[in-house]
Amino acid sequence: MNYRHAFHAGNFADVVKHVILTRILAYLMRKQAAFRVIDTHAGLGIYDLMGGQAEKTGEWQDGIGRVLDASLPADVAELLSPYLAAVRAQNPDGGLRYYPGSPFITRHMLRAQDRLMGFELHPIDAERLKENFAGDFQTRITALDAWKIFGTHLPPKEKRGLVLVDPPFEEKGEFERMTRSLVQGHQRWPGGIYAYWYPIKEPGEVEAYIKALKATGIPKILRLELTMRAPSTPPRLHGTGMVVVNPPFVLEAEMRTALPTLARLLDDDNSGTTRVEWVAGE
Image (cartoon, rainbow, N blue to C red):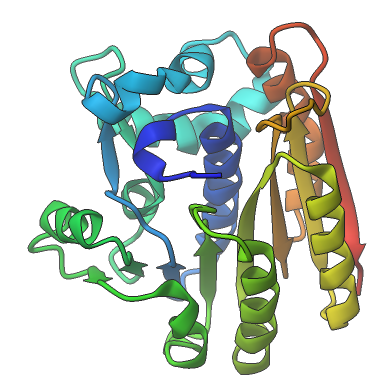
């Protein structure tokens, strides 16, 4: 599977992923103390939905295109407000042309005392990402293999923050790399928040990943998923998931509120399902 960001910007998986991201950031902002966000697979930062790669798939039309101006229940509208504000900030003339990736969404929410570190290995994307943040002293962009940072860049000096891991799944073994990196990162920074995105394509792979997470013995792992349709043969992407380690105490309840509405908006035939459960508790 190739999940390079530019082809899938603004699709249903991005919507769910970025809603979760903004809820974590909103929680971190409750305290005045500074925090740091480490984005391990940062991509380009922002995407032109009329550009060649995003236009080729058009996946955003069934993602953010369905959510941006949707009529939402009041409690869900409040939870989605930071996310939708970040999207609208990149489209000041109205409409929907540009979709912010996780670095731009994060940067939109940072306060003066907070910092963002973005890593991107793909050379063209890394250079574009650096250009997109040129002159921004709160953001540092590095062209580096994301899997190497867990032994070198943790913990951050702020001692508060989030590690966002969003691999492209271009190569086999991503689930194993995610598990190993969490073990390494958690040893160095056990109090950090870790959010790992994964595609739901082959249920057996996902369940093996969840089993591996349980075997680590790491506590406080929350599993969040939204599926659009039943698994198919041959397998294709039918859902999106994220595990959050050390999640904000409000995140479980927030996702129980928001995910069913997102499933209703994003699926085509009322077959969407959601999952909010603990892989490991205290």
